Image: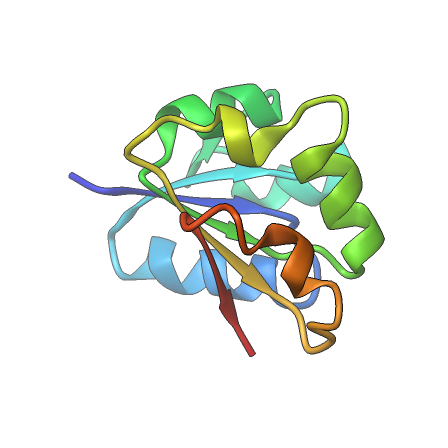
Length: 113
């Protein structure tokens, strides 16, 4: 079974994760704010770190509000994009894609706009 991961459970990520849970799919969630994960307990798997997310999810939706947060979480100390399991397919959702060229070297990162 495919595991769908969501990093960021705010205005976009939370509702999208909810829809997949309601559809009976296997969902893994993570948010820097633990309170944001609370509504998903008992209904989805809860990742304790980005490393865990990268190791367990087949498809990861990065629903972060700013490109700066993407850089910090995905390319910063954790380097989530490069350390995710080889099977992972990463999708970033953000209207402002001016920052995108710096990620073009990683073909596993796709965008939704």
